[in-house]
Length: 304
Image 1 (cartoon, rainbow, N blue to C red):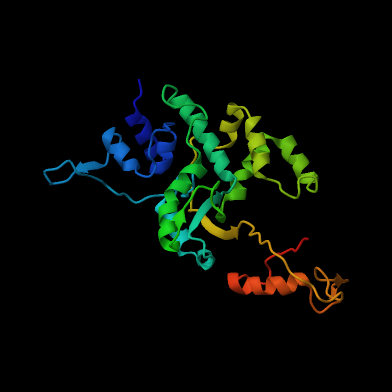
Image 2 (cartoon, one colour):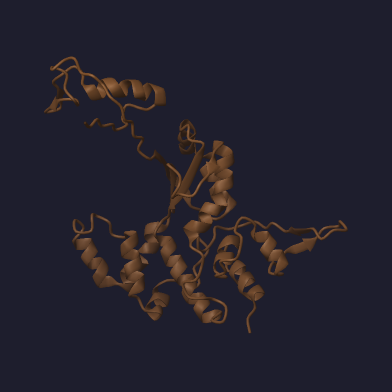
């Protein structure tokens, strides 16, 4: 019977990163804040050596890495360094929130690579791999980046359901469309329709939802004929396309007295031309914007 050792090191040998290999062990008990501890305790890693000290310290050898065949480098130091060094991240420092949460937008070709790996593992390690039991990539990414992002920004990470300040990182892959084109061979009718009815599908040929649908109706035999199983080593890492920051709405309540009937409640704009010099909304929010350091493009509304 195959062992976890064989499973884990087989994934490393075909080009998986360490964290993706751990994800596919399908064990929720693994602490992704410190996977090396699990590797050493369970004797999974071949490249582990004992130190010369008398204690039980171990060192995991570092090897030159390729982009991961599944996550395209998303869970590797190279991509994390790109995010931290990106000028686009500097705008997050301008928010005075002491806490943050984060999310990731990934290229759709990762879905093909995950599907390819699922087929490979079902066939080679049926006794170990639990179908669709792998730990979600976005969840592990959040664990992977939160400490480094927090240190760089000087903020503390919080779960998204309790945090008002959000950072969304969008990553792209140069070969994304080229890889997604394989779906046209697997589901020609589906993608012929999407090509001719672009308005119906909002101009998106390879939307994430569409890719998931195509994979769900494709037989494994057809997938294997048109896409490599296991997935091949990608030629390049992901790159940062955009980093978006946003804060939940802030609500103010209070009273005011209006002494002029000529002062409107909100700005009056007709055919793009402002008809009155100012309004209640502008007078109130001009002061609030100065205190909060808001830019002019921030939307604000006054209601009675």
